[in-house]
Amino acid sequence: SQQGEEDPQALSIQEGENATMNCSYKTSINNLQWYRQNSGRGLVHLILIRSNEREKHSGRLRVTLDTSKKSSSLLITASRAADTASYFCAPRYGGSQGNLIFGKGTKLSVKP
Amino acid sequence: DARVTQTPRHKVTEMGQEVTMRCQPILGHNTVFWYRQTMMQGLELLAYFRNRAPLDDSGMPKDRFSAEMPDATLATLKIQPSEPRDSAVYFCASGLRDSYNEQFFGPGTRLTVL
Image (cartoon, rainbow over all chains, first blue to last red):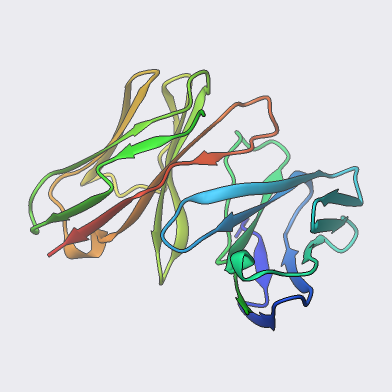
């Protein structure tokens, strides 16, 4: 399968703690994207990291990419209850027509 | 505030009925995607279009599903006849081919087939 696989499937933390989610993929990519989905809503694009980048920041989000291990991680620092959501990674493979294949996601619960 | 819109937001129907879901992509976006999300299967890509032409609909059950883009501002997904196993949330997303394929999702249509 070409989808990214997120790990863990579920994560429960206290407000203020950091949350780390991992993603593994199969073959070489052009970029890898992370999305968030709040309950009952559509997915929202969070951050995109290109294959020639190793780390990227956006606010409290930090994404790393290790192409040698075909893996990425998403770190949310100083988590808030509002960060409770499912998080999906979506690798964009070279030669693809632009479609993204989403995994099952990591369900993050941040307790106040 | 540009966003993808979908109608209806909720649909309850009986088995065998035709269901039509509509999507208005963000103005100027040339790529439109249809996804289905269930607890068991997660988010599945059903079909996608570029410049209104279907690029891939291999994820879609051909015997009952059809997807079209009558014009650049409207994408439709039809199920005929509907079955209980079609119950899911159907998402439309749009994007630009050149922007590394970031996708903008609509709020979804929650379909229940009784």
